[in-house]
Length: 516
Ligand SMILES: [Ca+2]
Ligand SMILES: [Ca+2]
Ligand SMILES: [Ca+2]
Ligand SMILES: [Zn+2]
Image (cartoon, rainbow, N blue to C red; front, top):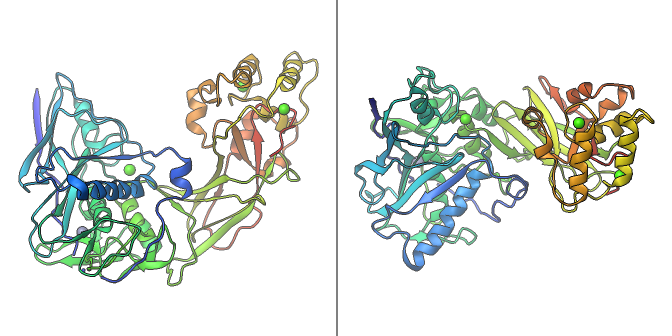
């Protein structure tokens, strides 16, 4: 048995301290939370809150504001983290600073951390004057018999962190963690815990502090991947540079030790919620009476740490420095002259960064992205109620005739609709899946898809969204050829692209009698 320890590695104690005003309306009501399953869950653990900061009446509103801050990250992160599962031969301890005492040490032993889950120990204690809160990722120590196990503890499936043998790489390009700690000042700070209301003079906004410290716990300014990109007091990160509109973003030099863990004071960006130009959450200071919300630049910094982030289409905010370009088009049912389809989400992805928009009632959409880079655009339509509408026995009859070669389906779109499990073949398996759907035994075709086609597909399982240029294919084209139309790539985008149109095919509706 080998034993390794990496005590509170990466744990930095960082203050939120002083700046201007940002107002706030609204919470994360955007398309993200409503329509996609959250990929990452921030699970707050209050068991070490020994000073009762989260107890009593005040504790209830503090917890609510903290959970809301968690949702701001859950709504934009799309990484997948493998679980941490100790067993007899492989055990570990979560290390870090105790939120109630500040002492470094073991926070939890032999804890199982579920997939996609990050555990944050939260508490309060008297912090030195000038500090209202602190946060950072935890470290760990472990005993193991299987090298693959320790490797997974270290990277949780993220690449660019370890060498597969449980050794950290010299150049680290991603970030992984079991979790971390956040602590709030519990003696001299008057906290304002109503995120939707203005902060009275003399009080500090708890939600802002929570966002800020959670970001540190998630590696902002604290991870090796971040620190390796700090050059001459700037973050030389490809994503934040895009948003800042320069080669690198200036950072705040924090006194002794000069930790470059914040954007330099005064840097602004468009807000992710209200889209107006505002100070970033990850600046060095927080003033009395001030509220801040996550901005594009904050999220791009997290992308530089290693998080895959999905952000709303960029606003043309005043002061925006990164050049923008737009992808625009329409989504129509089955053919260019088909009914407009609303609520289709368009996603333009550039490695870890994705921008999202959705089609309106007219079927039109517009998606603003940073210019001069490459994007892969895909479309997807979410689950709906009554998914079997438009899918009935008459569709199955057509498929039977096709399978028996009695009467072949003549149009490519009908054959796309008939291949409900997307294995490029129209056969009895598709009919079985449709029957279950018609009978209400299923509400999607997901379990009927081969794992490979499910993994490769970004579309939902009841719809297939295809680049409208597929209409140029002959009707006899093979179903294999269709796959190339599930996305569209753009290189060096620097002018607006119009007419980037999509066709929505409702799977199972072979005869196309469904109408929105
Ligand atoms: Ca990652
Ligand atoms: Ca099939
Ligand atoms: Ca039908
Ligand atoms: Zn900070």
